[in-house]
Image (tube, rainbow, N blue to C red):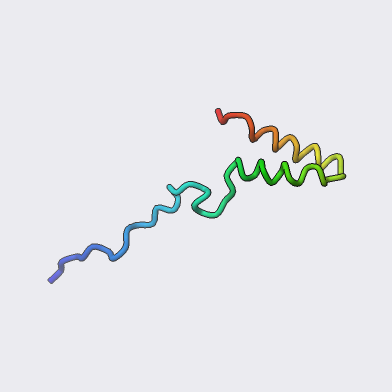
Amino acid sequence: MDKRRPSASPACSLDEAPDAYRGYLTPAEIAAELDRLLPRIRDDRLHAALKAIRDGLDKPAP
């Protein structure tokens, strides 16, 4: 009686799931949050760094 039974649950495929499924924000959601926050940031360096990130979200991925 050495028959193997298939497992009760399928193998985990979470690494293949989209980032949004795992709870991460999509680029569009990140852009929307930065659009909301940027007008309130008074630190010039931080504003410039976040603006560069925000502007990079609009560019298509290579």
